Every structure is written in C-alpha cells, then in structure tokens.
Length: 123
Image (cartoon, rainbow, N blue to C red; front, side):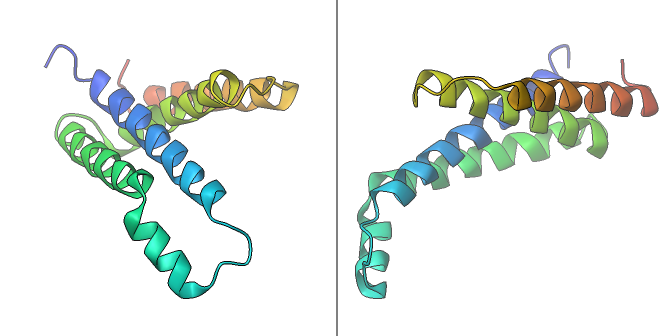
C-alpha cells in the first residue's frame, strides 16, 4: 500500500515499451508486401509477442492500481510516464534530439497530472 503510486508508473513504462516493439515491427515490414506476407510476418516476428506480453502485463498492473486509486489519477500518471518513457526511448535508442515541442508537451502533461491530482485530492 505504501508504494501504490508506483503501479501506474510501471504500467506507463510497460505501455511505452510495448509501443516501441510495435514500432520496430512496423518498420521491419517491407514496402509493397502483400496481405498474406504481412499476416505471416506479424505472426512469426518476435516483436509481436513481446508487444502482446508487455501490454498484457501493463493492463494487469493498470487494473490492479485502479483498486486503490481513482481512474483519473491512474490514467494521468500512466500517461505521463508512458510519454516520458517514449521520449527517453527516442532519445537513447533512436538517437533523436529533444525539441522544444517535446519539452513543452512533457511540461503540459505534468501540469495536467498535478491538476487531476489536486481535483481528486490525491497528493
């Protein structure tokens, strides 16, 4: 019960990690591939199964955190953590640069979480 706020944060990290693996799958699909080739590739690629497992685990953690926290708080915390994890994955794995738009988006998301937490009397 002491670390209950960590559960939505963990769910956010797992959701962003699943998104990363789905992006890797999408990039690996050859241009002009037929429907049958696309279906075969989706079911034979390891990235698909990593995406499914990570998202299933994230869903379980998300639902478990709903038992103790409000829907708004869980959604806001997991969204901000998912966004920051995706940004960090882009910077460190894809070697992109952080733009002003990324920084403002993160700041607005954190501000939204603070407003939601204040509204629900969580903090």
